Image (cartoon, rainbow, N blue to C red):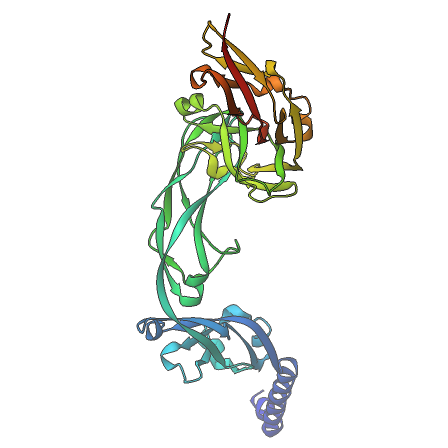
Amino acid sequence: MKDKLFSNIGLKLLAVVFAFIVWVIVLNLDDYVVSKQISGIPVQMLNEDAITSQGQLYYVKSGDTVNIIVKGRRSVIAELNADDFKASADLSQLSITNSVPIKVEAVNKNIASSVSVSMTDSVVTVELEKEETSSVPVTVKVEGEAESGYTAGEPVTTPNLVNITGAVSVVDSIATAQVVVDVSGSTREVNTTGKLVFYDKDGQAVADSKITCDNDTIAVKIPIYKTKAVPVRVSTTGTPGEGYLIGSIEYGPETVVVGAPNDELEALDEIVISDVDISGATENYETNIDITPYLPDNVVLADKSNNMINVRVLIEHNITRSISLNAGDITILNKNEDKNYEISFPDGNVVEIVGLGDDISKVKGSDLKIKIDADSLSMGENTVELTVSDGEKYTVKSVCKVLITVTDIP
């Protein structure tokens, strides 16, 4: 048996070596070397204080993620993904071109020893900006509707200003800090807190993870008022162009629904807009007026979007009308019972008035209410220039003189 075991030992050893070689060849054919691209590995920034300690902030322009090519045995490479690698950039090594080399390494040491790694883009490029602190006002966006018959008053925030810190370009773009409060179905004062959202002057939200604020949570108080409909009254200032008068004033809506504390709401009878300026106008004047500035303190519109009053002032060309007087149109006051007063018109009996056609077409001499005080008259003939007052819808352009003869009664 022993002789059989050791017989042809050289051939047997050669067979074992050959079998091993074949196994190695087969193994390499099955687990060959491959390359694989892995994308989107996030780059962690190290030593940020190298920048922030100098009063600056940085923004990554390119290189916040990195793509790599790994090379190794297929059995190792096949299962690898972005989670198996970590990438970092040391900001203390920032170059004069504001770039930092990226370092990528495998999370697992066994993987690190089994693969080689190369990068398609090997640097992070950053933009540096000066840090700035600024105060911005806090505003409240009221959402929802209070219970029917109620409306939300002006919100009060604590604080009403916040200090924000960030890059100059970002801080300078922020116009307001806003908190949202829902008042749906409310019938009493709303007290709540909310988180701030920053907006630019165009109303676009400004999102920047590097913005810091000295107050993250804002306390908000919103009064809830009962409502009622209140009439609007519009009047004008100024005088139309020469030869023109105001025909009428039309506006709408003629009432608005407002809310206010109970005692102030009860006392409110009307809202007056008294400064529609028609100075020098020779044609119809039309404008839209925001009624909000005309509301008394603590009074708010129930519908904040329905705040415009459309005003139309009709401007008409005036006309002159001559009115012929008779003695009966003139009243003499304080007559002496022993005297006789005779009125005559030696130089004409016409009074001219100016106004709109419809307003003055029916005005009679008696409507002018002309009066003369007898105490100013002496015995005999008295020439008196009539005094005629302007009416509500006309002005007096010219008057005449009358002759009043005072005599004793026989």
